[in-house]
Length: 280
Image (cartoon, rainbow, N blue to C red; front, side):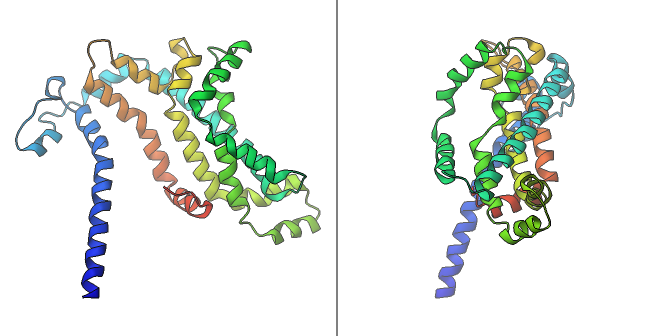
């Protein structure tokens, strides 16, 4: 009887997890399916129901048309520049701050850290107007500086790396000090090489977040030459109509680099999330 209850319990959990997993994959499958359909076949219902997910005629030309309909190459270049520069900046600033909060002793360290972490509780929509006002006063509107520099400092990155840095044995740091290594040498030669999983996790989170950022690039840029990919997708929508096949083809091309980044860093990503205590 006990074994039967255990089996039913595990079966229920697996069924629920499978349903949740399928529900998360369905929008992606619909996006890929729509990107390969003819425009007039997007919302036509056929029987049986599962045939709605399989294009009756695969139209690969949708991807070529989507690429040519808007300056996708320019949008790609802008997104790569912004996401790459912001990711490098976040990793360096967060690792410096995390090193100070986890390995250095100075008065008020813990209070300053908790005050810094408390800024994570402030909604982004609250600070976006002051940030925009500062950027405008500094004359950075319509520049890469406006897209990159404000995003290079995050409390989340500092928190993530601090949690990982605190797991590194203190003995390694003491041995390095005996050998004459300074604070920067310990940070560069010991802490960073031992923190690859956490650094990879932060890299993926930051790159993904900035690759899909929409609101901030929309606010601080006016010229098409500085627009990024998420804004570029809006070009497929008008006031009265939306070209769903081209929009979905463009969406697939936008998320493809993120999927590749996750595939090539999956091992570091899972290990970093596990060791740093970030769940979900």
